Length: 263
Image 1 (tube, rainbow, N blue to C red):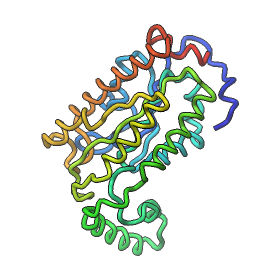
Image 2: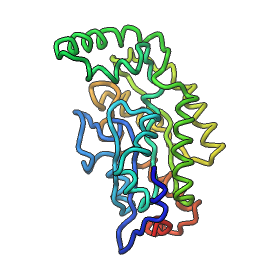
Image 3: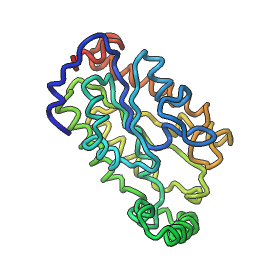
């Protein structure tokens, strides 16, 4: 990311922005994917409660590695960091899911040509993935690498905005047939993330604790991995509690003053 952001001149009465770098859990609802400004997804709920704007940078399947790439490559992120009131890295769930077939294979399926071959390979992948998932290993991104990428994100932001609150997340839970309803990689991911959070003073929101009732009630998305509206509301409540505590610890006084350091 360009160091020029440290000298950005943010003037006027512009509100702070909640910068969320996330996977599809942030913008999928009970029936599928939604626009980044949908009022019922948790980033919108949090920003509305804080009286902030929100910038959601997310894609389906994103891991902590993708979050780092977004931070260093996406000009929307560069534009938002100077006026951010807080940054949330809502990734890690995908990292801990079983990926017995190479992650690179899944990510490059779209590039296979001709289209007929691509469809055949995708069909084979979708048939094999749930059948191999019960192995539980390997995961999409090992915990050690997840933490390394998140730490790269944290140090990059600290260099530019040392006062900026940064929030991380513990992985959600799922009942997805696509992953054989297996999440054997979650405990190791939680341990690694909690150790990182303690060492670097990064508060973590436990997505699993927030969404378990929604996932196990059957009221979430039929795919078994994305949430319903109750799940989004519960995550928003947990995020608000954590963000407000982080702002208080940073000595911002009140929420409206959170972006003063960028001005």
